Structure formats: structure tokens, C-alpha cells
Length: 330
Image 1 (cartoon, helix red, strand yellow):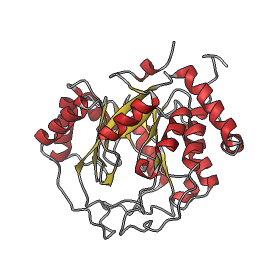
Image 2 (cartoon, helix red, strand yellow):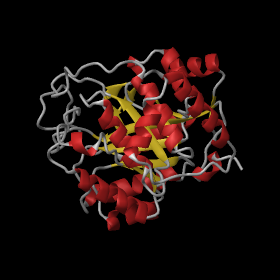
Image 3 (tube, one colour):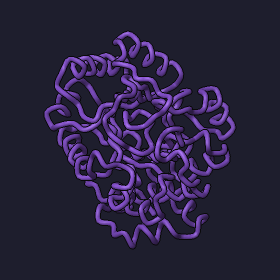
Image 4 (spheres, one colour):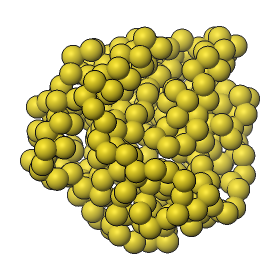
């Protein structure tokens, strides 16, 4: 293969299934080979995710600790002060992060004072030289345009799972609602961060369905986070069945093959993954992680733990970019 490898947006579920279900070592080899055509093999971007408004969300997402419909230990906190966010962003930059993500537990963005405050945060964090990402729930095209004008680089809005299984996890928002938000994000000129979660009780067919949907976006999401469910006491998925260990590896490798130019991000659930499994995922095309002790409300490996892992594997943290095309080899 060469750098002229065709980028496709017309995958069938059968084609994706054949890739996903291929012998695991063959799958990893194919993904690793393709990864090296489009990316620096030993370079990984470190991102930081901060909850700027915690809890009190009206949604009923079965995995989430921040829903008002679930009895969890998460305490509701209003929108953080501007200074707190800037301190966190500065610390993230000093620890090696090049992307700073801000998450608010809102069902949807509302045109109010809090949104105005978020726009100011976006503007000032962007001025630090970080890629700025937000995940704020559903938003309109006009709101997406305001975020873009403020300096937002990416917007995260995950599909979570395949369309057929989606209603088993969430009933307060439809799959089409999510697609509409992603359309607004793309039309505003923002880069798209969109992926999913494994371990929700879904079948391998549901995972294949999710990957097919993502791979048929045109263009592909610039960022594809793959999350492993973190089981949280008090949520409906507290006792969800464990996912076989290699399913995360299959997800990462298949995503890399289907979307060669995208950043594939190892997101939530890394504490449940051995260092050896994380290494396999990096080999298979994962080239981004979230650093820091916490992802919104769930635990995450400590920064020094990740630094030791990088050193052991010979990985380097990616330097700041403001254009995703910089990651693609010419």
C-alpha cells in the first residue's frame, strides 16, 4: 500500500464485519501497516478533559453518573469560574497536553449567560496555543458558529453505539438528534470528535454498526474516541457484563483501517486495561490518550504513570498542532 490508499465513505456492514471479525493478529498487522502510512508510528497526542459543569443532566444515558435520573455519588456543581478553567488548562499544557476538552453536563446548549461564559473560556484557552474541544450536548448551527468564532477547534458528540441498540441505553434523545448536532458542527467548520463506548451490553454486530456509521461520514471524524465502559454505582449499567479483553483492540484496529487519517483515541476505561493491552492498541493505530487523574467524573491513570508507559514503549507526546492535516504524512 502507499499514501494513495483510497479513503472510502461507502462501507457496507458486511465489509466492516469481515474486517472486524478477521483473525486478530492479521487485523492488528493490517491496521499497524496502514497507521504507519498516515501517521508517525510512535507519536501519541495527550489530551486533557475537564468537567466545567458537573451533574444535574436531564438525560437518562444508562452509563452516566451525571444524570438526575440515577442515584450516584456525583455531586452537582455549577459552571466553573473562568479562573479555575484557565488554571486547569495551563496545568494541562505544562504536563504535555496539546488538546484541552471542556465538558458540561447539559442536555443541550442554551443561549444564556452560561453559554456566553463558555465562549470566553474557549477564546482564552485557545490563546494558550491548545486545541480546544467542547462537549456540551446538543447544539444548533448558530451556536456551533459562535463556538467556531470564539476559537473552538473541535466538538465532541459521541454516537455511543449502533443505531439499533441505542434506544436500549438512552431514551431522552434520539440517534437522529445526535446526527443533527454533528451536522451542525461540520457545517460550522469545526472538526468532529465522535466515537462510542463498548461494554454497554451491545453485541459485536452493534459495534460493527457504529463503526460503519462513523466510517461513512464524509469527511470522516477527525477524532474517534473509543471508550470502555466504566461501571458506576447507581447507574443502570452498574452490572453490565464484562467485555472480552480483545474487543477494544478489535475496535481500535478496525477504526484505523476504516478511517486511516483520523486520530483514534483511547479514552475512558484505560484503568481497566493492562499496559500490555494499551501497547497493543497503540500498535494497532491508537494515537491519542486522555491524560490526568479524572475524565469528567471517572478515574484515569495518573500523569506520571502515563509518562512511564510512554518511556517504556518509546512513545513521544505529539507537539501542538492547530491543523489536523499536520498529522498526515506528505
